[in-house]
Image 1 (cartoon, rainbow, N blue to C red):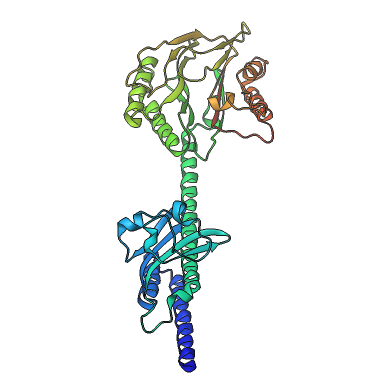
Image 2 (image 1 turned 60 degrees about the vertical axis):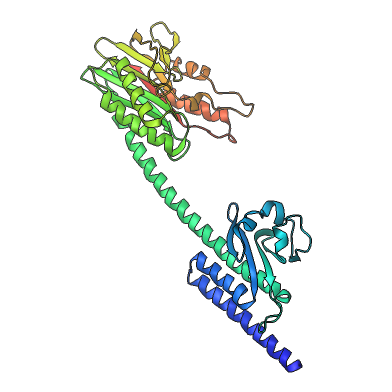
Length: 410
């Protein structure tokens, strides 16, 4: 009898080593997850004579990854959060409140770094079958085997997630470069005897929903625009890129500004199906007549400084944001003749809504003070950026895209 027991122990040891070796080789060979789980099932069912198996694994949420010998309605009636997380070690399911769980014999929790990563539930253990020693005495082996497989699956998921994140990072970098190409750089902005234009652009993410543009319509006519898409991220950036294409396609010296805004509204409605909208300020300027014609479509009112009267004015005439309704019900067009050396400073809400540690918004008062200080538009924008950084403080952060567009009329 003693010799037979020694033979059985040797057979069991060889079986365990062989099983571990097969699983380890399969993991090293990057065997698909479903094949790893099938090997695990085969060891439990074919070698250890287990009739029922359920296995749950955690990958951002608890999922059932293996089911064998179990009716689906029984498996669906077991929830990790409600039924399994109570168990910290291998336990017999002799008393359980869930009748579905009562159909099994044993639960085997699998922990990694003091956190549960899997649960194996087994039932219909055939202890009388000839060959392998009684399974119930070797549950720790099943636990070890499950741990190896689940950690391998978790590492593979992490690797795949890292690959996905890296691919997304590269896509964002490409999208950021493409978006930067759509926004005029300093060399593209006029600085001549008629105008001096300066701008600042800081997306909150790699890509943003803010936009500004400067378009020459004729020898003496220009269009400038600043806009902000509701929301942030890639979807906002894609909509803004589409808006830029439509703006440049629709804007011309012969088309009235109100017609441009109405057509832009049609395009945005067509593209977003009511899910987003765009606020914008658009203006036409004639260098011969010095007439500025503008529409403020729900945007933060730009600040106008009249160099002759030294007065500050907010440019509010306009309408609702584009894309809010199928058609714009009412639009007021602003008109003003610009005196020499006057300035307009346009900005998005990311600039004025930034808060300090006391939750006080930056507001427009600092902008009004800076623009009326008598310095050039470049200096004004530099001063605003410094004031914004001082306002948020070293521990603060910009929570939205920030865009500033300044025009000095010579």
